Image (cartoon, rainbow, N blue to C red):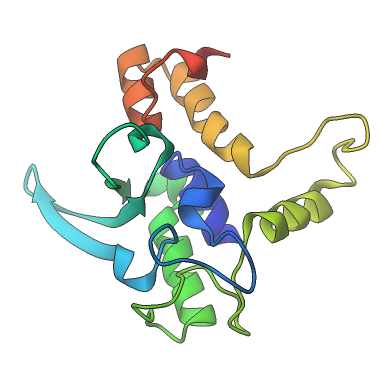
Length: 178
């Protein structure tokens, strides 16, 4: 659950780009499989930086092009942001759910029993967690999409340019302004 939250937000990902569409069935052509996520390290300005590289398949923005994969890089967070670090969350998930390694031909996000951790289940767990704080019946609440929208809001509050915000979310229009 926590790794999903951190990756949805930090990668500005749509839930369908990260999670299998169903608990019991998935297609390798559209699902993030074990072979589609790689931990990388690079030296940047003299310091080693760790990040996850996700090969997102058939993202929405490529529907009208021949491009079928977009590489998303999600970087380690340190200091005050370490509590929301997508690498730490993913490594914990990997250790607890997958005994430290991914199966290349299975979805990354599965439960410990092996079924797909799909957007519907994620949204149910978010609602269960926040039901006492938010009024879901009155139309309020948080879902998987809020993490993607939240990164745009966060970057805007931090003073990032519209160009940077659009690039982070892979938006070609100004829809992130809504």
